[in-house]
Amino acid sequence: MLRIAVPNKGSLSGPAGEMLHEAGYQQRRESKELRIVDPTNEVEFFYLRPRDIAIYVSSGKLDIGITGRDLLIDSGADAEEILPLGFARSTFRFAGKPGTANGVEDLKGRTIATSYEGIVAAHLADRGVDASVVHLDGAVETAIELGVAGVIADVVETGTSLRNAGLEVFGEPIMKSEAIVIRRSGAEPDETTEPKVQQFLRRLQGVLVARTYVMMDYDCRVEQLEKAVALTPGLESPTVSPLHNEGWVAVRAMVPAKEAQRIMDDLYEIGARAILTTAIHACRL
Image (cartoon, rainbow, N blue to C red; front, side, top):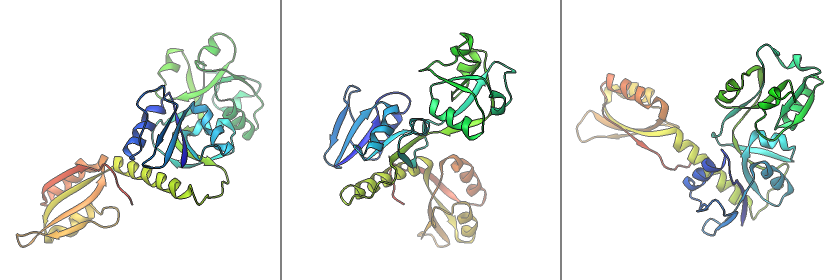
């Protein structure tokens, strides 16, 4: 049975559970549940603190897990990213009072407060900057006001909290993070679990594609088909079927959801009609 770690709380938990549900896996009904078994799919889910997931996976006790890229790197665990999931995106930045610094090179001799000591220490070392790093759990913005540090390094999503604290980001981003699937580094494929791991990844990839694309159907005249296909090339090639009325064909293709309205307008301009889009709930590519 495949053993998978899932975030039990925080910004990763809800979206991870939704994605797994869309992928056809049973999920917990109550937040207090720490372990459930999905016998149909032969998977056992363990709901753990997001910060601990990389440690459990690197130990080999769990086969794979869902966590944040920032949490994986900060943990220093012997685990690796195998699939980005596209949610819980954030940017890790330095911040301070206006005029404090322009870039990482200005941090020499400074004290930096952060909840991600591993990431910051590695970033400074890579750039040859000698600075002190103070570990704090949460609300690091107050570290500057209280004199604990002159600079902070933290996850920035909207920047509202920093602005409210009178701080501004500076320099290049330290890293960009999102939810990811991880497994133990250098893990030898196990003939029992590896097929399930690959099936799990295919299902999640199917969800990602289904969320990104819509199915578009339309009718057009044969003489306009090449122009229409150029607008809707699909992933491999569109499906084209003759209609009962001579000189007309029906076309079906997957198109990026964010471009669907523009594509519909362009198709209409070249004479396509009966243009429809439908959501894709699952797929395999």
